[in-house]
Amino acid sequence: RRRPQHDMASLELARVDLGGLPASDDEDNGHREMARAARRKMEERQLAKLDKRKKAREEKLAEKAVHFTRDGKAIATKNIKNKRLRHTVEEHAEFQKNAAESAARAAILLTEQQGFIEAEDPMERTYKLSQKKLRKMVDLNSAAKQLDLVLEDFSPYRVAWSRNGRHLVMGGRKGHLSVIDALRNRPTCEVQVQETVRDVTFLHNQSMFAAVQKKYVFIYDDNGAEVHRLRSHVQPERLEFLPYHFLLATVGRGGWLKYQDTSTGELVAEHRTKLGPCSVMTQNPTNAIICLGHGNGTVTMWSPSVNKPLVNMFCHGSSVGAIAVSRNGNELITTGRDGKLSIWDVRTYKRLHSYYTTRPPQSIDVSQTGLLAVTCGYRVQIWKDALRTKAQSPYMVHERPGDDIASVAFRPYEDVLGLGHSSGVETILVPGAGLANYDAFEANPFESTRQRRETVVHSLLEKLQPDMITLDPTAIGGVDSAPLAVQKSEREAEHEERVAKEKNRMRGRNRIGKRIKRKHRNIMTEAREKQREQNERERKERLENAGEVAKKIEEAAPVFRRFAKRQLSGNF
Image (cartoon, rainbow, N blue to C red; front, side, top):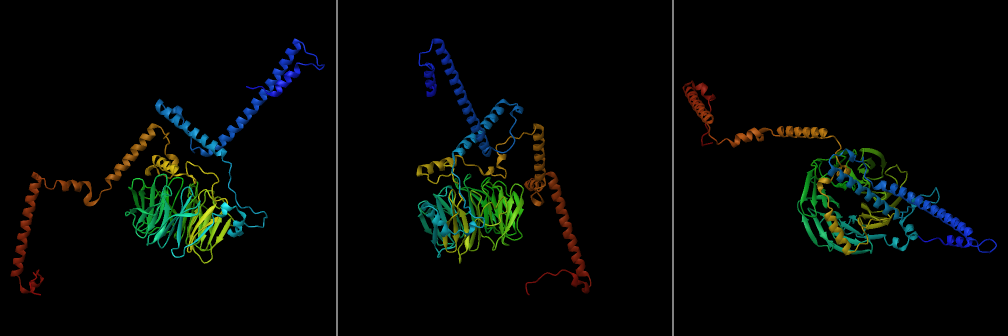
């Protein structure tokens, strides 16, 4: 370790006395000891400062790591008798701890923060700021993100963004499909399918997108060429793509919810909702649960591994118009045809608060920072802090007189909101809507072709199975800490319940006894032969008795012959 310069200077001063004469050996040794002591004290102070900084850094790191740690009680490994299992559980816990610390270290380096519009005067209102005034206040790059595409011949439009926010896909009701590179503001492909388009969305990246057309779902590549036609999805209305499972979910007029694996082309599951036609659908980004809104005012939550809804919530007295889920998956936003907007807590399934709109909302969306966009006819309102608390006034308002806004979608990692309306497509600026820092391994807006290919390969290798979609994603990978006797009794109870259900399942001609009898019908035994002879004797006796009755009727008086059965002749 290098000596500080001031220590060397103090040592040189110690060699000379106040009179300038050279010091004796004893005095020189004393000054050296004093210099060493001073140097040791200075090193101790520096080490104390370093320890203090290290301790503060560890406390800050632990505070950040809490946000990346899974919720739940830690597993007591001392109670595990199997050494190999105990070692595996300890390694898994250590891996989770290191992963949380690594994520916390990376989060500390992200110093960028999103900015919102703030009023200088208490009497000012941020929703009175128009896009025209906002364009003059921002820089040129931000101002270039405002687009207004007039496409009245093919409207109204549905819009959707890619996962990294780089590309925008829009589908016109009258058959117009287009993909735009939002970073350079230029179209990458454009196609006219010449039939109705109801909804559009990107798949795993911008190289493929799906469109709901008149009868089937079609998949196109980045050049606009048709790649697949999903004939099993008949008359769909809405579609959602689950990126971590590579599943394309659709729902339509028939009331069927279907899951298609886009990596293998297999139809994973199809569930009948039994609630009529459905045109309202969204996904929960935390657990990949599909939420459907129905005409009777209920919202159902579905998983591909269960053929009935996991949750059935009655939300509105009228039909559900639109639904959305917050980024953390804790809040569910629903709108009804009666103009009521409700915020629900998904953890307790209770209503937090409600809002009333001037017109029934057609589309809603939640940004990455919790901003809520609601369309009401020609007006779109953006609400800030409206999920956890009840806001008194909107954050921003944008109006298009004479147009009907049909679709809204926030752009990821950007302060931009996309609108699809009856005159075309528009993008507006919403300060504070996007995350200021992005994870390049998750979604990189500036990725190259090679990086995109590697991302697809890694995504396929890390693909999750459909059976892992549950309401509680933390339940996967956990350990059942119940005693062995309790687990055994639970398994026995499940087995007995399954056996009882299997016994009571068959009724009528398809029950197990009837099926066994049908299999042994052609096997001739002694008892069956005796039964057959007895049936033949009884048949002959019935015929003889019928002949005698007919003979008696012929011999009876003519007045009683009219009660006898007559045979139809050939002449009518």
